[in-house]
Image (cartoon, rainbow over all chains, first blue to last red; front, side):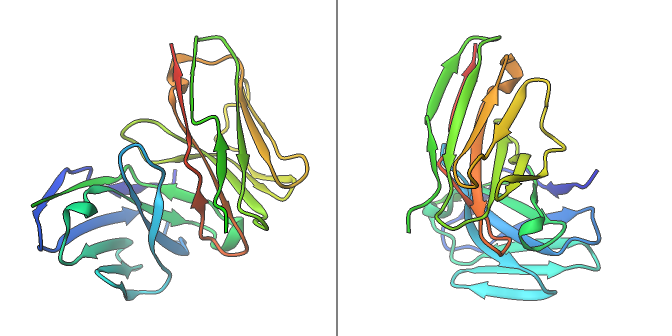
Length: 113
Length: 112
């Protein structure tokens, strides 16, 4: 059973701080990794994708991947109240359009003004 | 570019009734996915289509759930008969040749 594990939170950070969200996955052969943001009552929205070990930055967001440790993280710098949402980690075990996503349960982030 | 469309947005039914959900993917996207998201959980794949064909339906409860994508575009997901535990949001997503999936707004199903 392929699994993706996340701390369900809630994770509470003050406005302007760095929020750190973590995810581990069980299938060592996993190819691609995604972070989705989901506001309450809305559908998941893609924030970042990462395919290679190391860091990938996009604005205030940085995704980090360590395949040896089977670990993916998302850092949100200068957190804003509008970042308050549930963050879903997802892993594609095959890659490309042949695969499908296995999601974690999500981490609920709350950014306090 | 229009996003993934789904209807209805909300549905309330009694247990043992049947229900159907419709999805229209982003134009040109060959791959279509149906996910079930129970409150407090991440989405779980029910079925994946590549054009008309089924790629993965290993987690679809086939005794009560069915799905089709007859012309390789729109898709319908049906539940018959519904159970209380089917209360969830049903999400449709699509992708082109990459593995980036784009989600529709979802259908929130309540089974009473």
